[in-house]
Image (cartoon, rainbow, N blue to C red; front, top):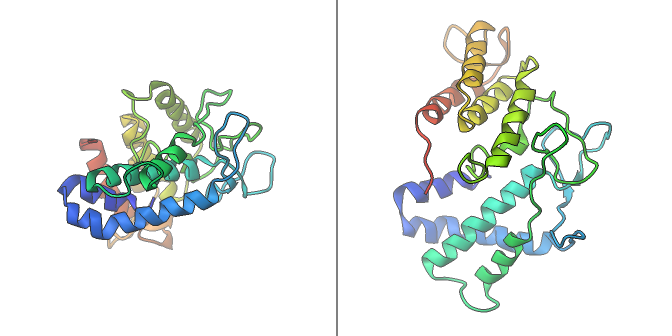
Length: 246
């Protein structure tokens, strides 16, 4: 996911020299990593992310963080491998039978699908028996909504609806971590939910996340000097106004 802004830079500028010299080598390293890491498959032939984390959260009733198939990890692989294969075609590299582009496309095609749980919500871990915990400041399994734009109302309507259920579950409790409020607002903008964005932005001003200097705090009531809030709000504004994809 750290490479995604570099991919966006290429999409915006069309700078193939940047793509060839700066981003392609990093994406290729990721391709080699997934060749080594993804070796086990489930009964459906999908790769298993054996040793997978959804940052700071754990499945309900299971006091273990390292489990299988976090959407955080699956979505990162889907982006990296997809961008790598597209880059190979754009640059005309790693082509031909048995070459890199073919190998990475085969891995991409065998990534596990996202799942929807009994609540109608998109699961944080795409693995049977792992149940979700909604009361948590992180929304790591919403990366396919933002920033990847992999889940859209036009392309994946069922997953889009399941992501909306996740947001509603998150909105049902009072979050106090500024970055949690903000990540939720970015996701809400991606889900075209103006009411949720409005609620979250108003919370930042009503509950004292800003100091007199307009610098921000990590928690409400000026708790912990931290730049998360003041750096992210402009991004939320832009996401509310404009959304685009290739």
